[in-house]
Image (cartoon, rainbow, N blue to C red; front, side, top):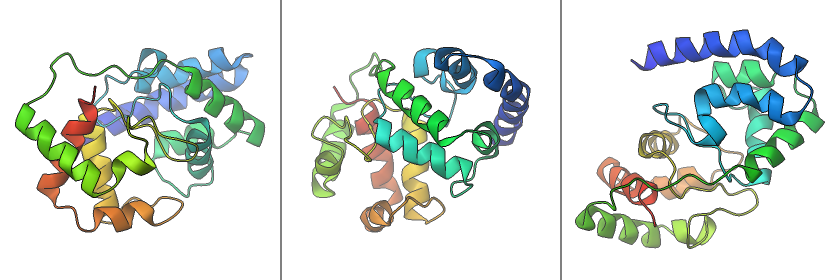
Amino acid sequence: MRAITKIMAAVAVGSLASSVQAAETIEQRAAACFGCHGEHGQSETAYTPSLGAQQSPYALIQLFMFREKLRTFEPMNDMTKSFTDDDLQKFADFVSRLPKPQPPTDVGDPARMQKGLALAQANHCNSCHNADFSGKENVPRLANQREDYLNKTLNEYKDNTRHGYDGTMADVMGSVSKEQIADLAYYISHYR
């Protein structure tokens, strides 16, 4: 299923790449992003992050890493390869102004929420990412991000298949078990 999703995303990105560059405003150019990241940056696509209200400095760094292939995901690498530095900043600023992701309608299982809260406190997630997980500067917003995306990303930091621009997340995730990662992702995605 993941392979099909990746192929579909690559085809969509390839066909949209030329229209992204031909569009004049950032809003027109960003419309292609919503095909994968959801309307107004609220993802409904498995393993794809919501972009809404992401910190501009963080988004800028991620877009730069995709453009330079320091972070590899072919659809994003293709989409950003022709971006100028100015384009990267405009997209990062645009993303930061999108509405923040909404929490799921269910409030979450109380036992899992309590486990997740304890893990977030023990690992200082609520310090670096702010007490409300809104992020700051080059630290991403996590609150109400897709649970599947959080779980995948945290596991990638743990097994060192995803590299940040520094080693902080790999260090933090080193002592967190896979079961704990699932509880942490559940908690953050349901955070209110």
